[in-house]
Length: 237
Image (tube, rainbow, N blue to C red; front, top):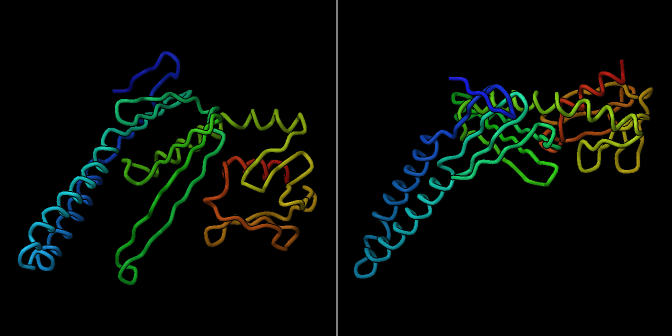
């Protein structure tokens, strides 16, 4: 059932953490360590069984704490903002409050490519320097990342346009900024007329001066990648 919030509007998606992805790995780790200890330390006469019991208790407590610490986390998207729940605490954010959205999507291959897995990690930083990290533990994490990024860009675009009209610089990484005149990085400037284009290669964003690489930045270090690409397209025509 779709819910409406008086402030944030219509609900667009509900993304709880997958509890199975919490319990199963924790259980597997505890069982494997238990089997290893059972055939090693536990075999030592005298102190072996006592030490094994102590170690297993400690490991079980750590695994249990890790599971319970993330048990009730969830994200709910609305038209004008989203909620982030961590335990019994639910925090409300508007999309305009998110000043940085960083994404990481990595395709892993196992056993010569027979098994494949994509790892997602989205890091959000608010205007108050609050940090939210969303990983593959959440249900439909790719969909969540796509929707969240689009909504944040839609809210940030008019803000970015207004700041540029005031001749301010927009930050898109720790060193890369964008202004009405062009791109700037580490004391270097690239005028819009000299921008030859951009491309994504081997997990990095590459900015070109003519046909030559001007700056390369790993994608996980780019703030608001979709907004940056949109502004580059607009100014390059």
